[in-house]
Image 1: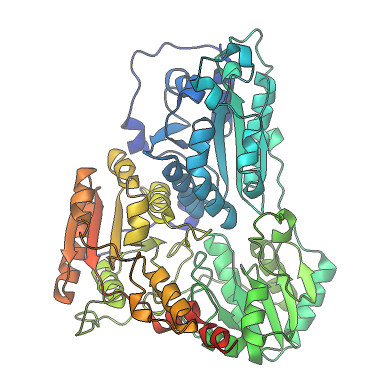
Image 2 (image 1 turned 45 degrees about the vertical axis):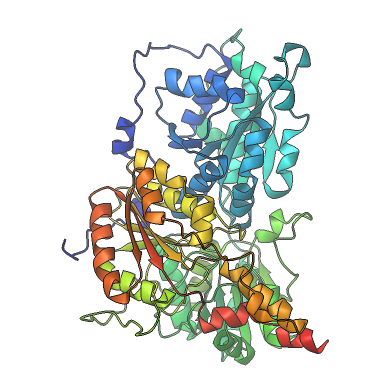
Length: 616
């Protein structure tokens, strides 16, 4: 198989319509043409089609059997098409991964209260990641007199939306077909309006299964989706531009941004015009080329790296482009002191802050706020400063005859370097990376090179997110690759079946250290603080013996399984075989047995505070 890259689509060319090949999967038979909706659930199905939602990821349940029938037998399983998943958490994670690429909500359906309970972790992940999903649930019958004995009673909740209300943007339980249509229109509009996030609509089973007594008057759904984009005020832009123009050492904290290549080019133009140091992180998708000369240091994960702290300390103006935890950067860098630099913050995230989880982090010091998204503000700043965006030119990556691998035990950096080498010049989208990832090993040169982590720190989000990302990328020419830890992979590996069934090409590499190793480090930290033996950190953490046969598990679900790979010399050839399978339309999983351990920067971030706590 040649390493020659296929022509990859740009961000703008990635379609939000269902891929033609998926339309051939799970085709209904013997359909009868319906001139108009006949049941309450037909109106719900029509509304989903009005919104041009291409897919609905689901795990089936009787509470929404009416909606299920309407999608299959009324819509013909098209717009939306069902994407069957083996667990509700996977269904929502697939929708989350899709939104990471497209920036648009697809739908997910979960059964009654019990299915929603299963899905809660994935909903929280999407909430923290500020990604849109239209989640459909069901209950009832709400009228207790019409419930079947036992099952309808335990699967009905008085206020089902309350289960996830604290980490969704909006929820509703409409009581009529007309209200159902309006609820779905509103839900889609709210989910896709920044700051974006998941929404939930709960449908009464009786409403779904009741015959329509009258037809709803037709409406134009576009009239119910008003454009909600905003622009920063001219006065605030002038003030921000004056501060930036007068600064000698600008630092840009590049946070939540879209996958737009045009917006990417605008950020590059701003940084180059200001000669600003730029800092990015691995919790969110690629926002700036990490091999650019102005990029301060390799992106970190859970905490800002020391080199980035040095840049922040030297700054006289700090420009925040919707960084996830600005107050955390200041706390780690300055301790209890406030930054002396002027702080310009570009973010509208405060508009959806809630009191339940405080996922919005601490309250940062800010001197000037532009309450919009970076995509909206940066072009205006460029205009005010006289900077012009131009197409970004990738930095050439030196070609090697072989990857630079270690000579000792196989470590995660060996896996990453060998994988990068095997991918060659292909356009790759990293759909997920493991906690052990070293940001220096893989440069990001395009907004789709990396789409970010699972958002809420929920272990098990990786496989479902990866399938959703690969679904959105299908036909784009980009190779979808996810690197998952073994703990993350095992929690939701059933996502593989969905990818295999719908022929969604995807490569998952499992960095298999046979441990929940992140928690080993935490147990070591506690033991050292308490002057207890740190060598016992592995107890209750190691996933061995027996070792899990990950390749066999993949094959059992219709994917191709490779490994376990235990030697550096076998990495590149194994990856090449797996990539060839993916480019032939398959799902491939490679089990790589790595030595437990993280990069020095990641380990330091996880263990930071040990010495201080010990002194106390």
